[in-house]
Length: 371
Ligand SMILES: Cc1cc2nc3c(=O)[nH]c(=O)nc-3n(C[C@H](O)[C@H](O)[C@H](O)COP(=O)(O)OP(=O)(O)OC[C@H]3O[C@@H](n4cnc5c(N)ncnc54)[C@H](O)[C@@H]3O)c2cc1C
Image (tube, rainbow, N blue to C red; front, side, top):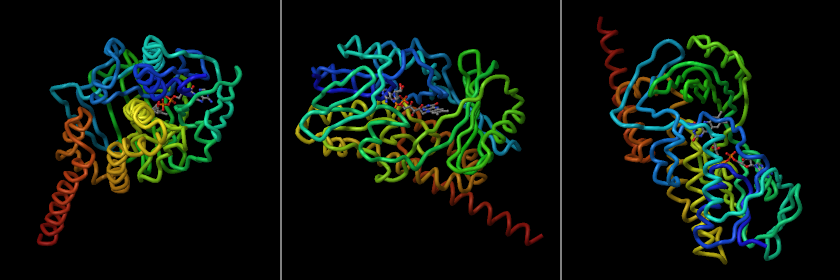
């Protein structure tokens, strides 16, 4: 019998379990795999996550990112570097194992290679049926990622997600990432460093032949696909109603709740934060944690809604988005990654750049007609 059972040992689950134990709760975390386990991910942490991670995480940083190259459809690109770090690259197997270890050090009981098969949360207690028997908790947190068994048990069905492909190869990319738009509808391709290797991938919110796109993209960037190509999905939310909060004494966090950025699919930051907020809701409102959880998530959800507005416009008008980035909006995006700017502020700034772009376009047409 536990105060809290957490399903899933990714960043959302470990963050939740860590804070719950710190708050004095008796916590059990159930993880399907043996840790460290592989997780398909570019492993890019925006700098703003720093203050939300347990001490010692910096030793896991493989690459410090100071800027990047933004490209458009293989035809043009530009580079913008910052004085300060804007992001960090980690290996997800190591990073997730570290977070889980920190939770254990805080007193969390962890059961690995234990798959949750179903849950029952109708009565006062939550029952969790697993491949290693049944467990009971006063509260249950579903942190079991994209294919969340807990979310499914509550009747949720994912409808909004990026399809993504990624492979790893040897290569050198110092202090920067490459992001290319104009390759797919509503999505992007990337080359990120991963220590002395590269992670190359493509993510797209609409159909199409993603394998073909990735092949052409890698070729254009001069990268040979010489290993396995992995595929996974990244959920996202654009509207408040897209969030899967949970029900009763069962709360959902991270990818299970769709708390992922609709622009680039950044999820680790939101996973860590939502895990922490779920604990605050349970600790401060044990009789009705869900209502408080909704309330506590408001700021984060509102940010993701603004990110959704930017994504929707940016992916519909990718060439305009590229030009606006080149003329200054990318430097503001870097400020978002460091935590100095919100998505709401970025959205408002975006309109200013968009109008400037429009005026200059009209001026070009006017000058052309006058010739
Ligand atoms: C190709 C790709 C690239 C990405 N790149 C980035 C990036 O650079 N930066 C970024 O911030 N985000 C990135 N993301 C998104 C990021 O990986 C996720 O948002 C993040 O992992 C969410 O964390 P989580 O803890 O919610 O879920 P997960 O990390 O998926 O963890 C869920 C855990 O639950 C376990 N589990 C699942 N089912 C069960 C079960 N039934 N019983 C017990 N355990 C279970 C799993 O084994 C897993 O350990 C990327 C995603 C993809 C696919």
